[in-house]
Length: 124
Length: 132
Image (cartoon, rainbow over all chains, first blue to last red; front, side, top):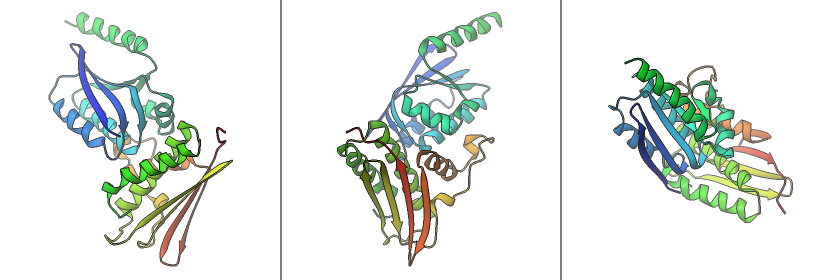
């Protein structure tokens, strides 16, 4: 089953990668290619919206956490939002929460991003 | 399937379709697909299978379990023996093989490997309740 990747920018300092379908051995390269395009973007936060992701395997985890490494090299971080139960189960097994905050809802994520936005403004 | 990752999606679709046809829950069908993906990709990537060898996956569904048997004629190799991940280290540092093994062991209840003649045989059993 195919993976569709859509990237949006909702705030100046973040981008959101929307994943639709399944992220596995076959489709991980599709995500990798999209992430490659973001390689030079200034990013404080890279959000992975998992609302429409119904399946993830270790190949997919490696893509997402590879992105974490790339973003961290530019002092940014990744966050995951809206995991379905099947995805949350896999994230729990691999203890993904040790490395990326997982937000259960967009409301929680927005609270976090609002806080970051105030800090960005205060810092100017 | 042959030892090609290219063959993997077709096999996994078959496995998942079989599980759903046997009225397993969507969650169980996806768990079985995930286990199959991790095991088969480890065999292809690390099992040093020759191009003319075959990898066989058999799935059997009974009222209380799904049994998966993966058999290949490569050199002695246990697909679940790939380096265990150090979960305290960063995921990008952990070999993907190890991460996949960890997922498999967390999703099945019984796992056993044996070398039978010239074949590697891995048997995995997941206890389930059918939705019927």
